[in-house]
Length: 334
Image 1: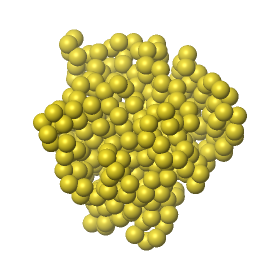
Image 2 (image 1 turned 180 degrees about the vertical axis):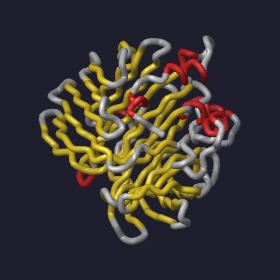
Image 3 (image 1 turned 45 degrees about the vertical axis):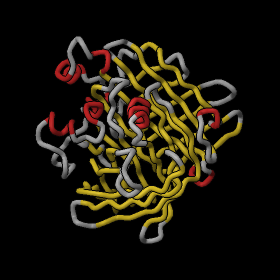
Image 4 (image 1 turned 120 degrees about the vertical axis):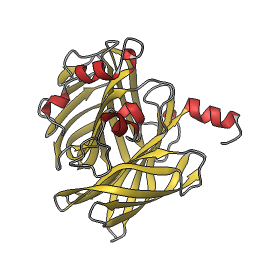
């Protein structure tokens, strides 16, 4: 169960899951998107703190339209060697980002003052409980032991602790002097675990949201070499429907690609009631996100149509890790 204490660092978990040889790889992350979906405008604020080193990465990105390189972004501010905050609940960084998580997981507030007349103020309020992928009372497929649950998290030990949550995000983005009102539902997340920059498990993080009353989210492990309908293996997921959260027991993604870029996503999730939810998504905006140097993430904002005809939006992040991709190419498998 996620509580307000999980807004802090997790020193006990770090001590239990690392030793002197890999404590530098312990990571505490926070991800908050922001978008004007009908304009195909989206971005995010991402934080990755390494308490064992005393540094934090702060990455701000904003995309619009179908870009495929970091240079296609409208705005990028990625800083990797900032002093880590002493307290992860509330802090300000030299990059211009300030975070207030003191009311989390019920509410999160972020502000940013960047360069080139770019800034934002975001107030995100939960519309569901934080979905803890390691809580067996919430997630129907989680394993009972910590070791087994972590091994099957979809991202290995990097998701030693992890939750996802749909939130109503309101605020304002000023992008190079142009103002945009932010008011929509999206998915944030927070993680803690052992996250080195070599040997990370290929994975995907995906959601389709149709309003405060209906949305779906899933984590998938990935096989880059598999057929288009077998690249994603369900790890965890949930459906929010009419105020109730239903953990999922399985799912499937079929993706059509142009290289590593998805051009259509057909998603199916089955919840613990046996109800299947389906949606088809096509990109309205995209960009290459490189949250750290070991990977490229084809980051896509899709327009989704559900099987009932509802229209919504949602983000796809697929982690393409350079070491795995290059090893497969060298072996002639990719």
